[in-house]
Amino acid sequence: MDFDSEFDAALDAAAPGRILRDVDAMARYSTDWTGRWTGSPRAVARPRTVEQVAAILAACTEHRVAVVAQGGNTGLVGGAVPPSGSIVLSTEALTATGPVRENGSVTVGAGVTLHDLERLAQENGMTAGLALASGASATVGGVAATNAGGARVLRYGTARDRISGVRAVLAHGDVIDRRSALRKDNTGYDLTDLVVGSEGTLAVITDVTWKLVAPHSDRVVLAMSFTDAQAATDALTTLLSLPGLDALEWAEGSAVERAAAQLDTTPPLPSDGFWVFAELGDSHVGGGSLVDVAEPVIESLSASGLSENRIAVAASAADRRTLWSFRERITESISAAGIPVKLDVGVPAAEFRAFVESLSSVVHAVEPSAIPVLFGHFAESNIHVNILPAEGTFPEPVAEALEDAVLEHVLSAGGTVSAEHGIGRVKTRWLNRQRGDVQVRAMDALKSAWDPNRILNPGVLFDDR
Ligand code: MLT
Ligand code: ZN
Image (tube, rainbow, N blue to C red; front, side, top):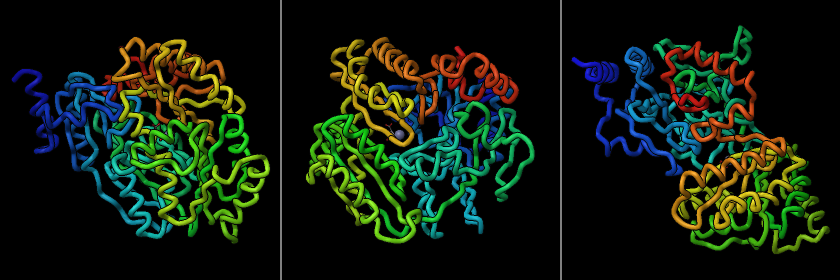
């Protein structure tokens, strides 16, 4: 048997009946959600158990075959796109769920979607805390591997804040089990925190222990529209001090228009400038109606000139969902218009307005016909910079020139080239600029110790070319 056939046989033996090799069947694992990044795996493995994951990784190490762990394939930086000749290790069949413990934690398989985790939490009178627009497909394992954030980071933190343990398989097939139910366990390096956010480069996460949180019994969503970035930034800064604030988001009016078109409706407020979205929850307010809590802020914004037709308040669950949809459908609406350059940056709060206002001139200096669309998470000064071509897709050199121009601008503002989505394949050439040689060497030493043959997600995080 030649080396390739030996590997194929070892893979089949590792997870019998769970290997795909048909190109059509593998298509949905080969291209990422943005449509910009695509690869050609030699196989897709869909193990059902941690033992099968371990056997797959042992076979890959023995035969030096690259492995790309993949959850719901909703990443936006090419972090789960398989390079040619690699295998995709899909965690979609790892869906076992444990009981919700007395301390509010639950251990679930990496393939459980965020929506299913939320359903499980609600059945037990709790909530998962973290919420993403892509939650129907995004899996807990992917959320852990990328340290995902979303709209409620302000209240509940990123995935790292919600995860108290993982079980993960190392490149040789050894299993690290840190699914402990204990809230305190101060015994050495925190391997969970190391694996969370490592983008599949250190280990394959098979299970996650998640800290659920108590839900609110009442919530209210406010949306406001402002004619310019200065007024919106002033309002956002005022809103940040509201008690009970769970989420504080913003979007250019043009982005809201796109979401509205996707929803086949019209926005309830003018969309000539900026929209602001805020959500309040009662469990942090201490009695009283949430609308009453919001009232003084609304009054002060009205007193400074915000007219009534620029404020919407949603108290019922249906109205809240409707208002949020103008924010949550933005990503989908951008992708419906073409293949965007997607950058997910953060700048210091003091630089937020100037950065937002200067972005189109930075983009247009590279490509005058490009269409920037901005939105994001205000509390973390996180700006989702999406740049659409006038039509179709940017030629790759133009896309890279746009990335370089925006990210240079971010660094000169003292910001980060990735606030939320990670480095993936897209931003590897920026990791050294962001973190410096000493830190990248320290990360690389860990990578080499844990994955000496560099079979785990090569080309992601580090520039392995
Ligand atoms: C969001 O905040 O909606 C997501 O990060 C998705 C995106 O940036 O497109
Ligand atoms: Zn986001």
